Image (cartoon, rainbow over all chains, first blue to last red; front, side, top):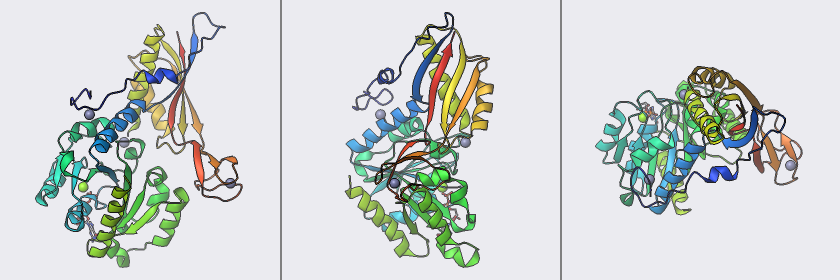
Length: 246
Length: 113
Ligand SMILES: Nc1nc2c(ncn2[C@@H]2O[C@H](COP(=O)(O)OP(=O)(O)O)[C@@H](O)[C@H]2O)c(=O)[nH]1
Ligand SMILES: [Mg+2]
Ligand SMILES: [Zn+2]
Ligand SMILES: [Zn+2]
Ligand SMILES: [Zn+2]
């Protein structure tokens, strides 16, 4: 049983760690011993993330981690998606300490739950697990996690999502991808947002795409603008396509 | 600065292993940090030195091995270390690679007393 929620997902014990931890006594030293213990530092988080994925899987829900700098358009994208998507979705909101973004989503009739992140610079799998039990997974097809606006820390934490969408907006300027390679390497889909503003900025979008594909050769890329409904529909179609793959 | 929360997890694992081995002190911690793990080694070291106080790791030596990206090509089967951030096989230019190392962070070794 899941310890926090009493859900019926079987918690497999942490004992499996010892299976890949090799202990060697060092015979030369009597008072000191060296042990080789090859463990991922974020092992516990990864374990919880796997548990979260099981929650999503048992409900047939596709979970998508949305990441970007602050202000790239994550919440706006979700608001607009509610108008064009032919699937239902909920949102676990971790972007702000206040519930402003959650209120914006609820106003659109989207099921949303705010995580109180305090001063955290990323979400981890434990925070998402807690939030998960405030979302009715039976009534949605897709669950978005709007991560903290930050291109660094969230990249290191598996939160239990199936896919990652990373947004980068035109006004942020060039070189975001080369400066934050770990984040863009994690992306299954990169969204260039606020594409309507291209005429006002020096922004070589072809060069940025080329950089993205050096980091992740098979990454999907779309350009979006809230002024262009077709571009938003393409995002919805991409998600729909991925939904049908599960 | 997620290096702080990473250090918390690391110290936790170190202490658990120390207790499991009936040790009273950890004298050396060796970690392997991938260049694409998203962790800044300098920040990690600073965070570790701050948080190790009042734990079993107090006063211990902290060694960071920086791990470059190692890939294995699915086409020519060559295993290579990437010299720059470009995921492409240096031998045959194929894009079909499996990443073997360099994107994760591991606790590797502990010296206990
Ligand atoms: N011109 C333009 N502005 C946009 C677009 N998408 C978002 N914005 C604006 O960007 C600002 C930040 O968006 P928000 O969704 O709050 O970003 P978040 O922090 O990533 O959630 C808001 O003022 C939006 O109106 C777009 O496609 N075009
Ligand atoms: Mg937001
Ligand atoms: Zn659970
Ligand atoms: Zn951080
Ligand atoms: Zn090759």
